[in-house]
Length: 537
Image (cartoon, rainbow, N blue to C red):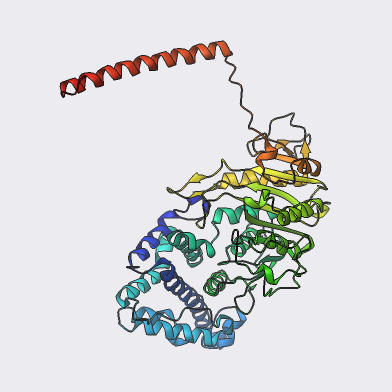
């Protein structure tokens, strides 16, 4: 995948690094190489943070008698303690040697020993015989040059940026398997922009590499908040992905509770008593082997027991179960969940709708995900539609907003599409206008952002045919509780060009006759050429 510059990446900087790193991969699978590269980036990150603090303490040594080798100084500053044998200068010095793999493994082991929070997280198999040590040494040099290349490109937070960018590139390189740990950044950003996690508890029970949390922290900081305004809780069932998440969040200095180990959220809920203010998730689509037959009496299934052959409605009820009284959940679902008519799933969907929990549904364009080309939608579910005066939310009881964004997005390569920043903003603006001001008659045209303008200059929501529609629960009942946005938004209005029908028809007919003439001329030319070649009739 080529990451759009507008979606947060500087193509010159990150892409050059990726191309250089990818050349060193040789015959190694992307899924295996991913841990080699990302482990080195993490090692470089914690070593750099340590070294910066070390230099600061060293400069103060003569005046306040600080010891740059005092471990407590680093712990007090929330910086990982890096013992001498694990510091990057030693790794870099050993890069040309055939023992570089063993040196890195020993460094990783030493860091885990000195920092219990990282125990069992770091990769420690760089000395394996199948890993080419010459290429590994070259990769160490490349990672060591990240800061230099970042300064040349004017990039801040280079290691965090590179880690995030490489996650996306590895997901693309791995294809279907890549989606197990990575949700496209534009989808994560849209979810975050819509639910606006300013302060409170954020939860993702299938957190992958932690992208939802990273984007949530970015949102908080972009809106004047600070690191720590949100408390993060997550869970991940894949052990290697769980380790990726721990490293990803550590690089961002994000404190998160991902549990003491990897675990399946259905069968070992590590946050059983958590009631979250915000839930952000991209669960695996249409899981058929989730073990539902062992959970038929689970208290999470308030609206009905999910079918054992598909976990979609198990995930939806899991999210609802973990919502606080004023909480909101934004998550990705395969489109089949919008309209499935199996008895169990229809009954669950009907119950959720009759309890007035579904706030908004957004149909997304295809080709956004690495795991699948099937179309997907975003669900926004809340326990409180009665409004929140503190955030300006109106009473939306009995209403659900439908947004059809299937025609949005642009191709970034032959098979992948992404939403632009302008499209993300347009969708989020529509939702926020609907939540704060509510439906108004479509008597005046909306602005370019999709909003109209109220009498006092406020942003006002209006239905836009073919794009968005505020529907009542009665309308949803009439459609058999189907939540497909296309059922509600209708067809896009065609703008009248002012040309009378008779005039337009005459022009089209004349053009058609011209094309007939051209067709006859080309046919005669082709026949003539065939005769010259001896293939005439």
